[in-house]
Image (cartoon, rainbow, N blue to C red; front, side, top):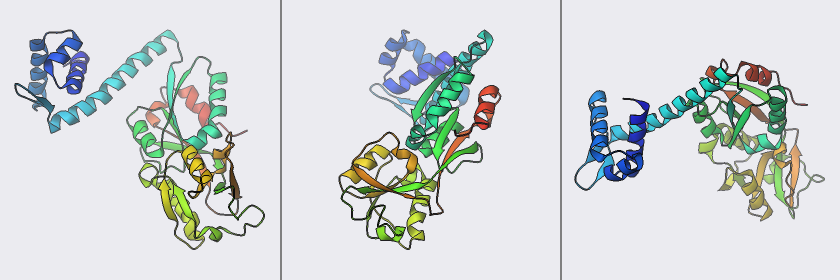
Length: 293
């Protein structure tokens, strides 16, 4: 089988109709059927159930299509990057980031990259911690920037900046910076947290701020968008914890109290797949030595 045949399989998996898939591929339907049958014989598994009316993926087919998408993405990237290297071009890097990273260190990092490696193209994707882990491991990202990630063993990481947390409060909340004593004053509050599935380590750290103050947080809303959290606080629907850097560039009518005296800190962290280091040696050397101004 070759790359084009694999692409044809993906089209059929999307259309689930041999005639429509063949029309889109500009080949005759019997030829497509023969290609699918040949691949199935080669791998020893049925990918598609078909009868006169219906076509659907088998369990083996679902797995094969999922892995084929990864393979084609990697092959296309390999081809493009090889051409860049041959022509002396810098190429592109794909960067994942969380909200607070963009509000603090990422713009300066991007400026440093552009100054030191002119011509490089950056593809930016705002993603939660969990999706970054997966994308880095599957080579869909080159670099990830996250807050307090639980970095998988297959990836490398470096903490680039450490922030204090802040508590975000509605503008009419009775507690402010002047009468705040300790975090236990928020024991009866309703909290807005990120979802555990998208960043379990980060959520655990937020929970520990509360438990260290002697209470378990009552979480009434979950959102992985900092801006959404700000709006919920503004509407009086709860209080939230964020890195102080998340507030940069925002002018929501809410109050905040910085928490420098608690042990928990927001660690803004760079992650990467070590396999990428040989492809971008100058870039990774630059990032490993980068420091906040």
